[in-house]
Amino acid sequence: QVHLVESGGGLVQAGGSLRLSCAVSERTESMTVMGWFRQAPGNKREFVGAVRWNSGSTNYADSVKGRFTVSRDNAKNVVYLQMNSLMPEDTAIYYCARRNSVFGIPTTVGAYTTWGQGTQVTVSS
Image (cartoon, rainbow, N blue to C red):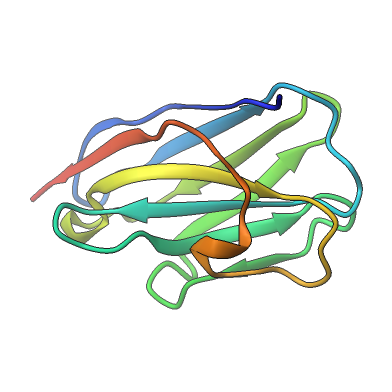
């Protein structure tokens, strides 16, 4: 059974940066998409960004475009979420997720089959 383990969360001031990592416990197939989602208290889990493992193509939520970058390291089997210009409204638990054998880049929670445990990101004003 595959495991996803996030790390890198923490407390940062507004305008600062954080990089989250998600380690995948088994080799990633070429048709895999790795996504990042977040959930703030009282809110639904929402799509942040994702990357196709084979091509490196990415897709982002409008709220993070130009500030967040998703990337992957094929050799290490790790996906990253670089977050710059953080704002208090970015405060949430951030989750990585995996979907195998898919075309395109899904943006819905239900499209992803494997989830990490989440890491807390808190942005102070």
